[in-house]
Length: 67
Image (tube, rainbow, N blue to C red; front, side, top):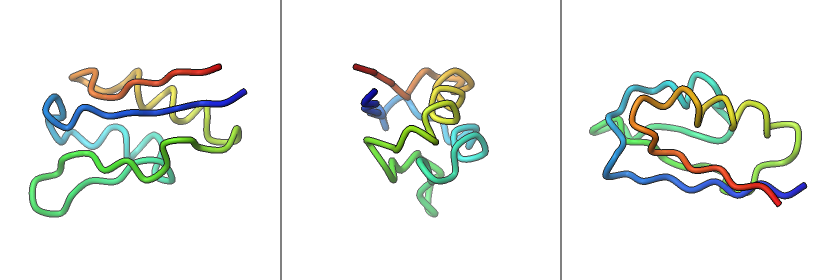
């Protein structure tokens, strides 16, 4: 299964929940804490963590699609 992740930086509030859930997939900019997508197509071993990150995002700034 292929996973594709996208982020809406305009929605991001810099909470950092995504980084805590999936540090191999997400990071934050140093200056304002806005999400940085490190891996838009993570390997299967990171899919559960990426889904968790999207679900805990307080502003729904992370979109995950799977095919």
